[in-house]
Length: 513
Image (cartoon, rainbow, N blue to C red; front, side):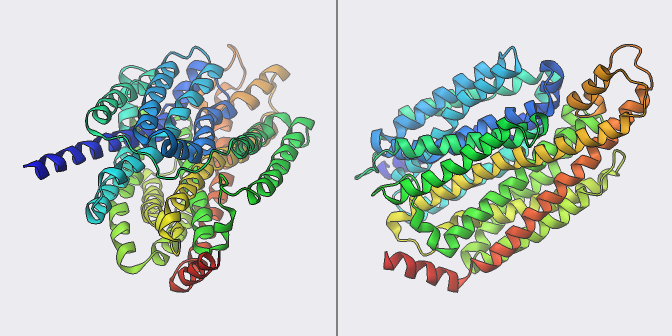
């Protein structure tokens, strides 16, 4: 009886941990569906929409490893519960944000809480599930929630936006976070690391500066000018910060980032693949949502339903990939994922405002299958050849690489599309009899014809709207080609850094250290 009660408590803890992953993952896809509504109501530019997404993932990427180490020091359950409170508070603030600037600030507050959830929920689970077999099953269930929440996000977001408005997408997080907090308080024991790593505030600060400067330079480059003093200065800050970070971390006994791990081919490959895969995923979610709603004129609900071929395939393929990795290794799913990304993105690079939906759905299935295949092997590849005492740190770096990929996907693909849209629109509209102020307004504020607001009496309004749609679609082709290139990187790195030989080289490197 006591054993059965203990098992029930462990399952309740697992459920609470899964709730946190659900709302964090849900927040990614549900926010992307809301971007056109945010653009209409808060008069956001394309770069402003990029910041709504990237402000969140930038903070998560910067703080993920720090939050995990702090949980080891002050208590995983305490850190996890703190994250739930901050995430819920940030969600509420986002729902009442009166301006785009404040929405971005509140998204950063939300992200501070989000950075505390995933690493510490995983640590709570591993402390509760002490039996190796049960622990593996629990982690498998926990990881599978990502696919479920990714599939649910577009539909839930579409329903809420259609029924209540875009602000309601943030309300979902609050009751879920409250339930998870209660379950942790009631059923999860507190745990700490026997020997927690020392904090590295200097390294942490440098990481924030490097990523923030890089993201700002990429996102604002099309508007400020790539050769402007501000953008060039930010490139310099980011590059100099990276050099300082590498020198500083190499001299610390307990660095924020274990640089010696990058001598392991599987570890380095996992970091590169995680960055490339999530570069594609975040860019896909961002660009495709704008195309469906702003160019094709879909409602938020219809756009959410339209992306189900991708998200459902992610949910279906991910568990199969996990089982395959356990039996046959990581090389085939990682290299196959790269080829599927190339095929899916090249299909999307041929889209037009009136492309048949079946062609889009085929591309969504290919990209969804790639994401489902690639995500489970990433952590497995990162820890290949690592001693047991270092697997947690290696897995943390893999998670951080995913978030860096999210930051770069929205920033880089968004910047390429913005730059291409501005150039194409300016050239297409120049022959029309438009006042300079109207021309500048259309070029620098339009995303698609559905969200375009033209002054009353503007001549050739229908033609302008058609040019906006065609220009955005053509600019989007540049983004899809760039995403396809990331697929090529995934394929090449997956072949060269996985397999028995790579694992044995990794083990030899770590043994030598």
